[in-house]
Amino acid sequence: MSSPNLSDSARRTAHDVRNQAEDLKSTAQQNAGAVMHSAQQFGADVKHAVQDQLGNLQDTASEYMEQGKSVACDMRHSLEDRIRQQPLNSMLVVAGIGFALGFLFTRR
Image (cartoon, rainbow, N blue to C red; front, top):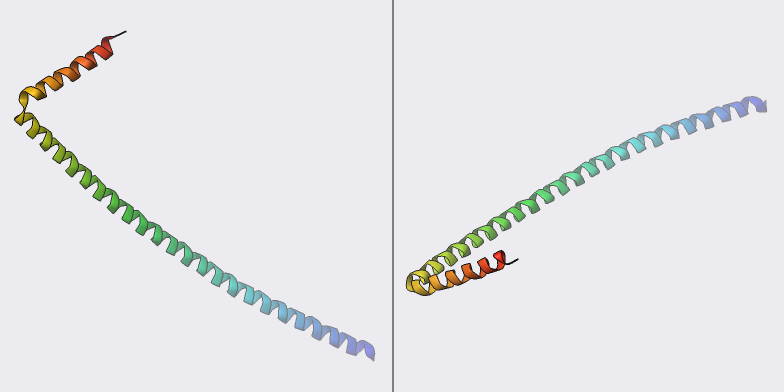
């Protein structure tokens, strides 16, 4: 008589273990889906942050380039004005620079 009770008990235990295993599997699949969704969201957030920073960097670089152009243009106008105001001095300076460069490059 103890054999039938034992087999019923063993069957119930096996059935309970199977049910718990299925519940665990289902929970693991749900958690895996949530983790995957979180990872995808994190990746999208990182992508947007990098794109925003890249846009800011491009804007800053453009601003510096415009400032550089402005400074170069101002220097060119200043140099042109100085040459117009003192043409003889400008020619002497250019001749001196040319003489010095010629002396340095032809000397062996």
